[in-house]
Every structure is written in structure tokens, then in C-alpha cells.
Length: 149
Image 1 (tube, one colour):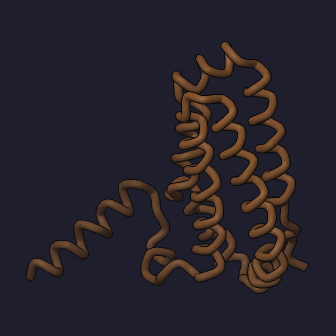
Image 2 (cartoon, rainbow, N blue to C red; image 1 turned 60 degrees about the horizontal axis):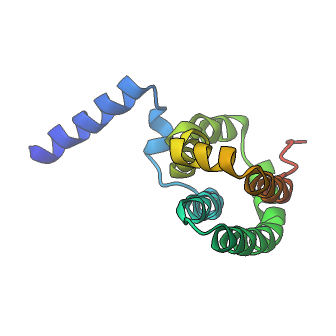
């Protein structure tokens, strides 16, 4: 009986949040989970680095993260692109609908709106510029050709 109530509670919560039930009825595809893992590690590491008080350590952490992320993403992208292009329109739409539920999105938003990081960037525009350059490099490595033919 408790299991049934838990299931109904979960379904109710998903409906209240506007989440598609069909996506949650199955586990997250391995390729999508791997992409999420790479992005989550990227943004979590950036957050840790930017909370480090020493600028030199911060830059070292950010540069190491970028090197690792770019290398991992370059290896991962071809398989992900091939997998994604094999999805039906419904499946790809369901994946897109999940975007706001991803932990890496929350981490990215935390980076963008963290008051202490904002203050640090005001005090040190060179650090801000270097951070933006590193993020740009990571974003370029993340670009994928996902058009379904």
C-alpha cells in the first residue's frame, strides 16, 4: 500500500512540475547520463576553483579542468552525436524537456549568480577574463552536430 502511495506521490509531483511521465518511466539513457556527468564535473570543478581564495590556485584548477574536459568531450562527442541522431523526434524532445532537472544546470546557474564570485570578478577583471576564455574553450569542445537527417 505504501508503495502505491509513493508511486502516486511521484506521479503527482512530476505532473505539478510539468515533467513528461514517459521519460521518467524509463532510466536515463547511458549516453545522456555520461554527457550529464561530464558537464556536472565541469561546473562543480569551476565552482570549487572560484571559491578558492588564491588566484593562482584558482587558475591552475580551471586550466586543469578545461584540459580534462576538452579531452573527454572530444572522445565522447562522436558516439553521442551518432546516438542522438538515432533517436526519434519524441525521444529527443523528451530529453530536451529534462534540461531544467539536470544538476549541471543548477551548478551553472550557481556560478552565474554567486555574489562572492561576482565580487571577485569585479576586484580582478583579469581572473574574470581568463575564466571566460576557459569557459569559451569548453563550450567550443561541447558543440555537437545533433541535426537529425
